[in-house]
Every structure is written in C-alpha cells, then in structure tokens.
Length: 251
Length: 251
DNA sequence: AAGTGGTCTAGACCACAGG
DNA sequence: CTGTGGTCTAGACCACTTT
Image (cartoon, rainbow over the protein chains, first blue to last red):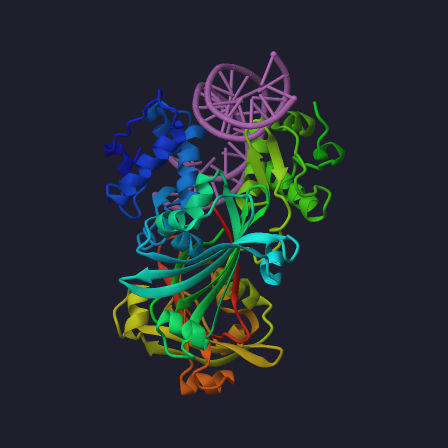
C-alpha cells in the first residue's frame, strides 16, 4: 500500500446526525481541499481502504467522492486513483450568471426598487411565461448599485399568485430569495446574453454616455414542475460589469 | 399499483454489450422522452418495480435515472415518484458558450484562418497559461463566418508541444476537436463575457460601424490534470450573435 | 396506512493503467 | 501481475408525501 494524503486526515462522522454520511464525508473532504490539507494532485487513497478506515461501505464512500467529482474538485482515473484536481479552478463563482445575480441578490451591495406593481403582461413576457398576453402579472423595476454607482437596470415579470411582492421585501432580500422562501424550488433557466449601444434613457439611468456598450441579458426561470416563474430583461454597464463563470465539461 | 407511462414501453438491454446497463437504460429513457413516448409530467413508475421488470437491481436503475436527473430531464420527488420534467427545457444548447464554440467548431458554418504561427507569449496569455512571458506558444487568429458574413474574430494562444497546429487542419476541424484528437481531455474552463465598442480595426474586420457594440469573451481552458491548454480572446458582432444557454440549479 | 425516493450495507466481478 | 476505479447485485431501513 502506498502512502496517500488521506492517511493523516481524520474524519468525524456522526451516525446520529440526520445529515447523510456521504454528505458529511464530502463536506469534510471539500474543506480539506480548500484548506490545503489535500493539495493539488494528491491521491485520495483507494476507495476500499478508505471505506474500511471510516467504517463505511464502499458505495457510500463512492457517493461522497462522486459528488466532488461532479463539482470539479476531484478527478478519477481507473488504475491510478482519485486525485485532487491540479490547482487552478477551485473557488471561482460557483455556477454562472444565475447565481451571481441570485445569491448576490440576498446580501446585495445595494438595490434601489423603482417600481413594483401589477400590469398586463406585454407580449414578450407573456410568451416567455406561457400565459396569455394582457394577463395581470407582477412587474418589478430595479437599479443595482455597487459602491454607490449604478451597475445594472433590471426588469422582471412574475406570474400572479406565486408570491407576494412589495417594495420593502425586494430591497431587503432579492427576488430569488423571496421565491425560495415562498416554497418555489428553482430548477433551470434559459439565458441569452448580448450587447447593444445605450439608448438615451438607459444612458441617463446608468450614468453612461449615449451609445455606450451595454451587456444585455434575458432570462426565463423555471421551477421543478416546469412552470415558468420569472422572466427578466436586464442591462449592465459593460464598463463596470462582466459575467464571469466556470464551465465543467461532461465527458 | 397505479398505471405508469413506462408500463407500455419495452427496453432492450444487452448484457453481452460492453456498454454499461445503466447507460443503455438511460439512453433509451432519454430517447423515449425526446420522441414523446414519455410526455412531460408522466410518471416513471417506482424504481423497485421497474428494476424487477427489467431484470436489474434497484441501484442500477437508480444510476440510470440519476444521470437523467442531472441532465435536467427528470425530477424526483420523495413520496411521489419520478416525473419527466414539465416540458419547456428539453433541447436547447446543451451546455453553454463553451460548446457553442467547441462542438459547432467541428461542423462549423465557416472559418477563415488568418494566422497560425509561433510567437512569444504576451503577458496576458502567459499569465493565463501559467508560463513565463515570452515563452514560445502557438498563436491562432480566425474569422468565423455565417451565411458568408463575419460573425466573430477569434484569437487563441496554445502552449507548445501539446498538439500540432496548421492552417489546413484548423479550417477543417476546429481547435477543440483537434485537442480531443490529440488525447487532451478537456475538464473545465473559466470564461468572462463583456461588451465594448468596436475599435476601427475591429469594425473593419467585422463589417460593423466604428463604436458598434461588440460582445467580448475571454476563456482559459484546462485539461483534467489542471494544465491550462488554451487561452482565447474573442469578439462577436452583437448585432448578429448572442450567447444562449441553459442553467441547471443544484439544490 | 401505503407508497415513494433517500440512504446504506457487504459483498462480487470486470476493465484499465502501471510496473 | 497488481492495484485502481467501474459496474452490478440483493437485500435493508428511514423520511417524506399523499390518501
């Protein structure tokens, strides 16, 4: 048996906890990787032995490892072993622009809610939400700020009856957090990112010169029943904002 | 036992095939969903019974189902069952801009290779690739066309010694396909998408007016050992191109 | 109470990489 | 040849949702 980096680590598994064992292990492995206890390229040691040492079955250990492989933190090689991915990646914006808007929306640097009201759905929003044009929907208009400067102008349409929206809650919490709180489980979203020059109105709102390049994003989000729960059309100041994200390739 | 949509389907599993059973099942379920044999919202029937009917163990059936859940085609609900995701999503650009450039690059609508040569790595590319500034690297400059019109101007830096690059192969196949063919397994990429006005040179190359809004993308791609294998800086005509992609939310 | 997915076990054999 | 992950089995009990 060759020496592996996990030999020196001890993992504390609590069988009385409601947290699944594979999840407890995954979290502890992840922490060890982040803290550098498991450096890039280090071998995890074979699954059978690891299972024996932890008092777990091999499938349980595999489930923990697999979840980290899916996250891109580990790489498996048949006949070789499981290694910590060779540096680089690690801690960059976990998913992509969904989360940068969503998560960040919770503890947001600053949001000014300009409009919250019910309106008849315009054609584009109605089509995206799968409802008839003119059906009443929530309409939200927000300005996102960073360091006191405007960064983005956000407009959203949300079907009626899904959740209560008011000015106060939107400034405090962000749209996606409100949805989660209302029992809506987000499942997927379709996005389209483009660019165009600023119209005079947009230029004024965002403190940019007319014609300045803006990033645009349209997004429709769906819950796990396939229902469209939100449609947004947003513009970002290209001079102050870009979408950063990491992709994992499925092989 | 309630009637489920899978009752009427028959799956053909070949135990002599080297293709894993869970994968055979997953492919056939996926095909049934795409062809509409399993419509949106239809129940798959419980895993135990399905396993029994197919002559498989439950974990194997679960593995097949899980792979489709990860793809966003199915949704599991404890106490309820497994359902086909309620329409909508289905067949939109499988991942995101990586693939739109990558896969599409194979059977690309048209690519004009402007430059292929070795150059000392400029500062940005060197930093991205983790090599010393001035180290010789491959440099590639391409114009992407659609319907005979320019759509994007692509520049790439590739470390030496990874693969052979020449004008001919690049026009025929695309960079990422060449890499795969050279035994490089792509693992992840970091991207940054922004926008800016066209410089005079860019305007001329892309047949846009000066100052027109352009989409910009910078990407560094890594293989499964964590090695940076490519860095690209690209500009797209915003009037003719946008990034479309779908996100899956991990809950 | 009944039915579902979620987790877990303790084995087995195979395919592939490396010395 | 040896060691590794990849696949597969046949059970078990639990947690949750619905009736």
